[in-house]
Length: 356
Image (cartoon, rainbow, N blue to C red; front, side):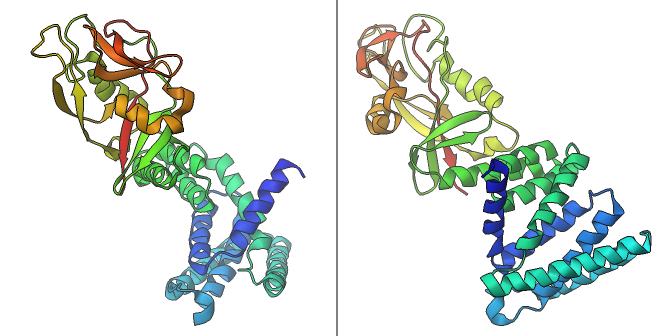
């Protein structure tokens, strides 16, 4: 079966037996998207159908409603769509208007047959029509920010999360697009399995841990050719140029607007190194948004990361002066260290994403 047909069948199956509340939300999104259609005939056909569909939701009995309660609103929406359809009909040739009404009624009868046969919500037969409306909306209004916010809402309802996030970003400040994109990312991350790959901003991440109020991620992409600090000398995560970069320019580069609010501050303890015996091995506490692993992180998550831990720079000082601990190409932790002022080890950022 061609890929497009398989995708269409999955979509029809997904929507066929949705609860009235989900169906109601889908109809609202379709109603908004219909405003983008330029051809009056197509608008007329859709508003006729929306009139019937909202009317059917308004007439549900208690058993059919499954907790749905927006009956009065559906009645108003049915009347509104009917009024719009009648206004559009005035500008259509009589034969087109009559054909459209006949076609809609035929579709309605097919819907009733579907319901008797499958017990579904009766929208399978016109999902294709809805998709066609959205497709035309995309072509006509794809680059219009206000429309992309609506398209993002539709994509979210249908489960096309990646597409929805991109649409929200195009919408930007209109209809709170930036915040909607960030919130959808947060929901995806919160629901992801341990070890799953997720997207936050411009970077792909691996889910390492879920706690009660946040999720730990580590970057799938490494930073190369960046030293821990600019000059040889005493080594500490607290004063390192790498820490300054990750919590400043790096974070601003990878995150879109509103995503900064998702990142949770983390209190860290790191081991410092110095040629002064009184300072060597001392511990310093910092509060960071972005950080790199230490030895404990390697031990805790090596089963998840596998070879991704190889060649990693760690944030604790090494036993030798002017070095940090690192993970070798074979996956062994080398406490003796790698020079802190020389690039060569991979940098793999970590961060916590707060739950709502």
